[in-house]
Image (cartoon, rainbow, N blue to C red; front, top):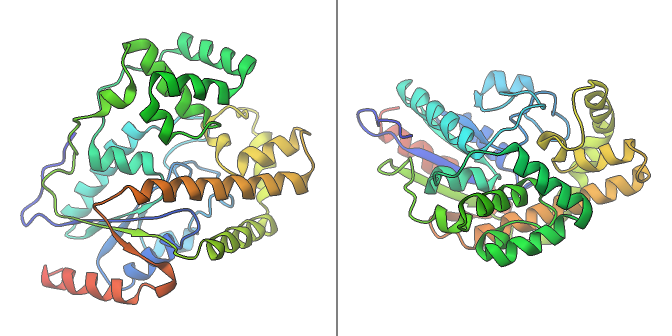
Length: 318
């Protein structure tokens, strides 16, 4: 799907970075000075009811500065990269029609890659095959299935963590259904944003220890704000299980397991922090291979970035 560019071909702005780098704060500060609307690129912010543990912008902030693709589905639903691309393109078209600039902000690199590079026509999900993969995982463990994926599709396995059940399952499903590696099918795709003016930044901390301290402080703040109670309320709905994609999000997965009695709260918090750091590491690894973006250090602050974009939008008459 591609959105027809309006007259003047207004740009699309992208600000990506690892979790905890400060992307939302930068985006909101830009929205104070330039005619931008924020489009979330985050696989957890799409879910209603996942607020504290996702560091979701407050309702007051969202009322002041429009945020799109936040709270768009129930946590019982699955939200895919394909759906994100469709939703993001619709938002981009609507924002441009208002003579404003879309600013895509987030760290879900699978979604961002799908939008910037395109999606291959992959087979639809097959419930019986997924059930068979889940049964093998229950018997052997997801790391064993990740090793199997490494033999079938080394490129895909290199981008997927050994515990990322959802993505391992999908990659194996594609391999077994088509007889071809998913990474091979994804080559040669065309970006739905081809031809659009694109400005792309990566917010990459140069001080890894400072990022780790920030992540620990953020998790501590989430716990103080009632993160555990939020997970308890989600469990109490009665229609969610630990296998739903929403409940496999970092932090939610570990606290759910604590409430299941698998480990004490202190250990659940430690595991959540370790998983958050691993997520940031995977995101940074992906970013090191990205050659299209300009890298910014969050320690420097957003002022010069805001000044440059404000000047550009003024030159467009916005």
